[in-house]
Image 1: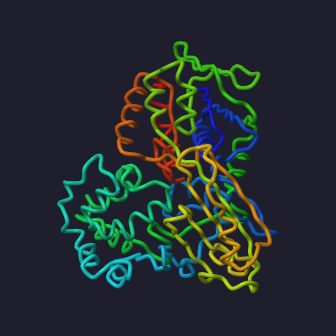
Image 2: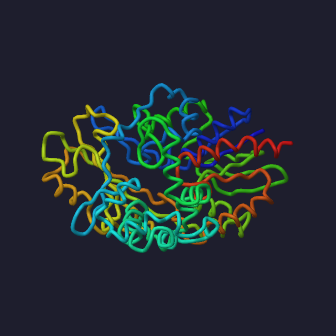
Length: 436
């Protein structure tokens, strides 16, 4: 069977490789001259640094299998988790972010009644009360208390997503919240049970962070090599048609026909392509809004100006709506640089940034960086607003009537690389059902 994949980001390349391994004749069409989507690496002298996705976790088995498939299994670096400090930037101070119940009990972010209320989370409401559509703010208030929402949840959510927790749908933005709560009778119980099941050092909530030795772009390069000439750059797709069992579209100067069509694109791009073919499907996809993002990477020489937060830290700043990571010591302790990564999400694409992150970090370090990199991505991440699950259900219902069409997107499958890798892994079986 012929399979055409529109979109040369991680999800499109992963889908193409899975289909190729299953015996399909595959071709990938990317509108731009660059592969990888949100994956983008640069170099600080000989040291890779990420301007997009920074890595994946050792618990992300589908992504790990892809890395091994393309020959990177023995060339992966694991983060040094003991070097990472999570700090919450408040109006008047920096405070450690509590990462476990013991730290929560001692946290200066909450009053004593607020701490006790948060630690009583398993008793807050029965797991069956976990609704299908509930805001992150409502979930946090119901389970952890209003003080935890104000002092911890809201600034963390705004720093990581650029959105307010009142606008985000809990089950779509943070599916682990509902899953762990239902499975263990409480989120804190579920998080503790999840940690007990792991061995070795931990990084954050999900496992050890991994990156290829030469950067995440190596994973994209590996997928490209494995597809062996099946990738077409500068080939924007348009004019999508369906005739009996064939899908057709124009890609540059070529008219492409395929038995199986995979759209591996952000939801708005899918909507534009599908609008002439299925208005209802396109409408549901177009209702999914995205955040723009700007990424700044700065290299400060070690031994120069004093580091404001220690060797490695993640600063979550509510007011600035950006995240900062000190990666010089996270993967490569011998690195001569302190690498600062600042990420700011912008609610509306094409909105000009209001302030300069560069000037803020020059002030923190007492001088300019030795090198600077920046990248702006207009469709950086779906917003997972209230009603998102219902919109995804409408998309799925329309797809049932369109045999041979498959959609893979951060808006439909989840924003993590692992979510997209799992969707790609499931694709051959779904396509085989069509062939039968």
